[in-house]
Length: 288
Image 1 (tube, rainbow, N blue to C red):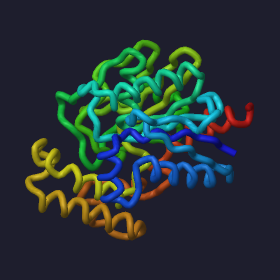
Image 2: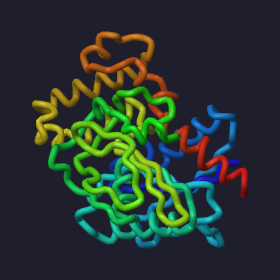
Image 3: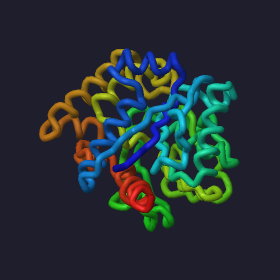
Image 4: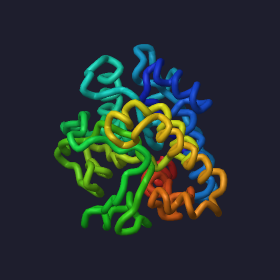
């Protein structure tokens, strides 16, 4: 059985907003996705312990050490690393502790930024602007084409994305695996006995949830020039909801948003998470 630790990147207010909008916290929805992927990739049972490291009173279950888990997964967040608040630094501390304990770690968006900063890199507001909806024309580097994180990905692809910040400088012992014109998009870090794999995009996010996230980010999208007004954001979000509900249809919507049909397939969209479970987390659990 996979025994995973899932760290929610949001503080209490962020978790409440996410729950109000989607019906669950980021960690709860990520845990559900991890369970689905584990079952699809060999039928493994998956137990997820949820923790909120932004909170001062966050703690592992009594008597449990980080080394007891087969992996740590860190979600996205509405927090900003540049704030340097305790809610931020506590998450950096958890990332360092997990890597020092030899845990394999996967992070999406915020999770990748935290890993970069925790190991000596830099993250902050992206001078090239944000990506809202999809990260476009992602291209694996030569190292990325050979790396197991991106196994099964084509030479160019799109992926769900919602971010204004990005990794600006890679830490030592990091490998750039994919990028696009906007930002660093996938990295691997070896730090002491720990290994981190992560993406700036959100392989865990279904298109209906992505639409909700866009509505929550309407002000940023308009300020960044991604959409003209709130009506345009709502129309984009509505299209994503329809695509999620009817994955065999709506070629007109795929064409409108310049999307390949692979974005509708769970296995394709979640590929990096599946590779992490298959190639790092499950072998660690089997060896325990």
